[in-house]
Length: 427
Image 1 (tube, rainbow, N blue to C red):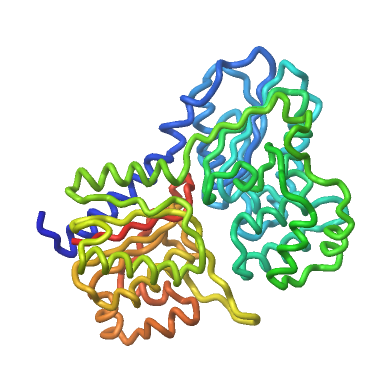
Image 2 (image 1 turned 180 degrees about the horizontal axis):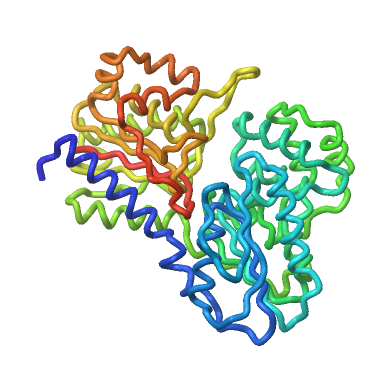
């Protein structure tokens, strides 16, 4: 087909929508449920998808007596009749999330072997289900979360620290639920799909240690509240490890993941006459640097036909980071817009290159957009509008470029989350 700006934009949006549909709990969750048990069914969970997952359980089990509650981000609730839904703050926890986490822990206690705990876990659960370990406060957890988010630490590193500051994460929810049967249905938003990292693994063994958490804090030079530093140093009450008896009746099922979303986008790309190349579902690193690297690959396709000839689309997922200098305040825009701005500057107006980068949960950072689209003339349009792209990148204000140009993508909460999605179309 002949690629114009309009057809390229439409194609990229179709790829993004295909990736999100592949992770929609309303379409996929029911097939992972067991036969309804004879005993009680207690449903708990946390994450950006937790409410819609709970609604999907109710739809699949209309006659089953269900109780329990799930915690989701503000604005992500959906109507339910038997499972309570509580909204809380993300990415920094709040009192609503702390109180709801205490209710979740209480809901699974005192059950018997004939009962079933159904845990619905998705990305965002670490912040949403924040129950500080003994001796720590919510303010302690908030301070550590803010420091981790600004440090440049990977999600694996951040969640290692979070597990060791929690009374519910790192397998502790599973320990509270024993001896009941425990089934976790999870949607992965983390590179590698490690169950211990998804929402900080409340229902699975934690192979990490207090010593590893201390090493991460030291590596990034994070200034901890005194109570947190003392807690990590004391290393009392380690998380349950692989082989612990509390996991004997626990099962973990991954129902959606970044790779599956990329494969759905690849199928859509083929239908559009594009050859897809999946670069991986676990790309990490500094957002703007990754954008620069992806621009280099795209230019190679356009100029040399390597690693594949055009028309093609490069697909990737994962979770990048944005590192702030000490004392620097973040501008507007999340990691996907920052990666896209890095791509735009590196592509430097190369013809027939378009890119979409966005978060599959519908919210990139703290603004109302899922991501944005860059076009061959983005820099020219920005200059005409008096926007300094390099200065905006330096101040981490990528939203300040793409929003005035009308290139942001606003979907609202998608009610799923399989992390970042990046598609680069080479005509």
